[in-house]
Image (cartoon, rainbow, N blue to C red):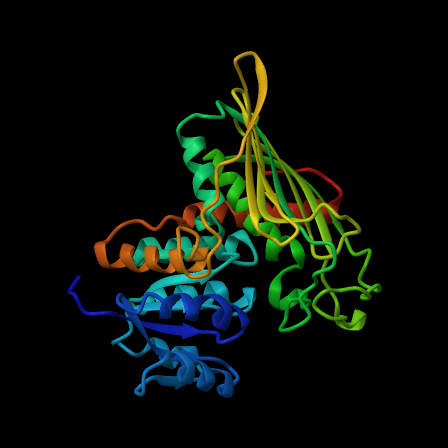
Length: 365
């Protein structure tokens, strides 16, 4: 590819665009520029163009119009989950590389159409699982690949909030999102567990989904929600058995009466040692390895970098690293860290968890 900057089109100018994607892309301005913004609410697209686009940035309310712009190389699909698949497929077929926010799609059939389109067009596709780029995730992944834990036969995937239900946008809309906490934050924890284990062959899934606290909005850290419009689960749990016998326990909640909160974390249990991703009271990550050394039980904590804002090894967030890696993969024709085939398995398992909860039976994949 030439040395010119990649031109990026943003489809969906809501919270995840303003909080994660557009700031991350702006911090990688040497590689790319955002030249087009689309949202069904024109004012949101105009605000995005004003904040993150150049003076010639284009604004659209129909994504099809943006995709007809031949100057755009890359599209970020940042819409409600229901729209992920068909917009992604259309963008790939229009010759664009696509970063789609998580989850890949609301079901595995739609996720498969995305996989097929990427293979058919030869364009790159990745899914927004930025937590892989967090410091503790990177260290733990390396430890797993170097065999520090031995054979990992059990994992726990954690996405547990005490009372942090998102009260904006369409998070509580089952039709638009496909579900609640499980498909929203459980997806991140499951992605991490599968990635650490390097195991993408699920055999069976059993799930439980609860709607127990929808009428109890008091104490929510993001403000009270309206029980009348809250149509998704507040907590969900699942047991996933893999073809090689390994097992993953997944816990997810937006609202659960617990003080043991941790989000986008995993605990791993191997034949030579274990590892736990913990969450401190101020929501920072802490990684603890456990093993046996010199005949004694030992716990090891990798030292964190200096906590000075904007300086040191922890100055960048996962989203900024994700964006830079993604852009460099396009420029240098490399595979992205989050492969669509991996994200497909996450969607397949989530779908099976909802199905198991509905039928009360184990789902064999």
